[in-house]
Image (cartoon, rainbow, N blue to C red):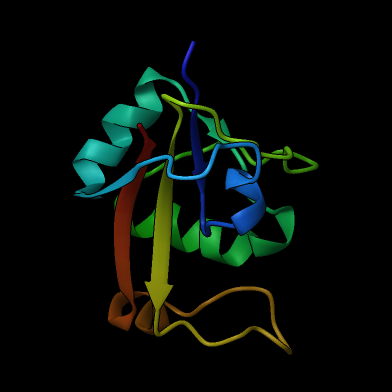
Length: 117
């Protein structure tokens, strides 16, 4: 049965078990489409250390995803997919643990779905 994951990045190791030449398709998704995908069931592969980014996603889009205590090791197989939220414009948090409302509203959030054919 295919699995859908949710995370903030792709890693080459996710694709390591796939044979050479395996097709991967990318689709841009709206927050509404992402909420529907999550409602249908995803395996979150979020890192708990990104709590501020997760809170920003929840506050701005109402997207709720369980934060695992330890992110799973993801090894994609044919038919699996990954929803990825990319963010541009949020500063690195070096001396605090959350973003301001202004930082969140001025950042660019993008959602993509990657499917393994």
